[in-house]
Amino acid sequence: MDLKNLGGLFLEGLLSFFSPCVLPMIPLYMSYLAGDHKHSDEEGKVHYDKGKVFFSTFFFVLGICLTFVILSLSIDVLSGFLDRYSQIISLIGGTLLIVFGLHECGLIHIDLLNREFKLKLPLGLEKMDFLKAFLLGFVFSLGWSPCIGPLLANALLVAATSANGYVYLIAYGLGLIVPFLITGLFTEKVLDLIGRNKKKFRYVMIAAGVVLILFGMNMIRTASSQILAMKDLNDHTANSEENDIGAYLIDYEFEDVSGNKVKLSDHKGKYVMLNFTTTWCTYCKVEIPEYQEFSKNEEVDCFYVMAPANETGGLKDIVDFVKENDLQLPVVIDTENVLFYYCGVNSYPTTYIIDPDGHFILYTSGAMSVDGFESFFQYAKDLKKD
Image (cartoon, rainbow, N blue to C red):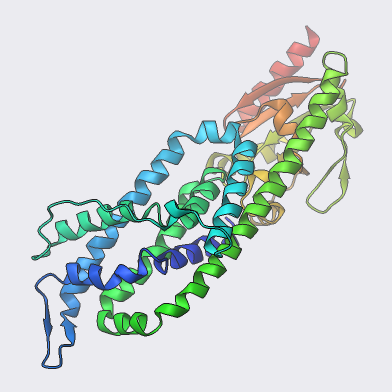
């Protein structure tokens, strides 16, 4: 899991709190949440019952969390579609983020992103309780969505095109709700601070715009390089005899985690087993000792295949994964996703066998035991005999 991305999304959540549709409304929210647990002194200054306000704020935050739970579930439902079209989604999403970033910096104006949709419900806010606070948080978070759109959109795009996307939504959500909890605990001091520094928060949104532009540029760069690699592979397939694409990949020059060159053709004459895996796959981690035990079979050379594009933190995630799990087998770094693309890998772990002549002959998906690998390999040898 990439801590930089987690930190970046947490920061975006904080920036969302300071957006034009949230920050100016904080005094109103706190007034609602305080209900009848506030009073004014002789000078007209409002004082809040700290315990009661924090209790209401806590349930208000839970209502906001419900919105993010719904969003994370929608990402899980669409995960197959998002994985299949991840490059196109990244190109479109990266372009949108740049546009959103320019809007946040004030260089262009998109009226919709400055609006707040107000949902009017008869909650009876004069007397606040935990259920009303919960509903208020849910309703208000839905109303904010268009206004904090640029920042929320980036969180959704990162989550949609990353492994375990819900974790990134949680990071963004925490960035947004932590300031509310702090406000609920120190209501009077926070409201006073906000009142004295409203004009300065414009610079916060400019900083947010710059962050969005950088995120968008990086998404476009990564997706473009992958699409170009796929095009080269498809062009080669179109101009080659059937199955010659396999020979092309056998001679393709990959690298390992240390930057050393790796060619599968160097292992011709023996069976080669490729185990496609990711750092975030729980079943892949369970399978590691089983696969490494099977690799002692001298009839087959075993490899892991991993792609930086499938990891939130890129190559660093893979290097850390190799160290943390003490991988003893060579790791093929599929930088351009050509092996993943050719083999049609969309679930993990997936294991392929290449015969001694360099042909991709058999695959299976799902974690296996040592006996499972042995049976799978024996079946491959029997196919070769036939």
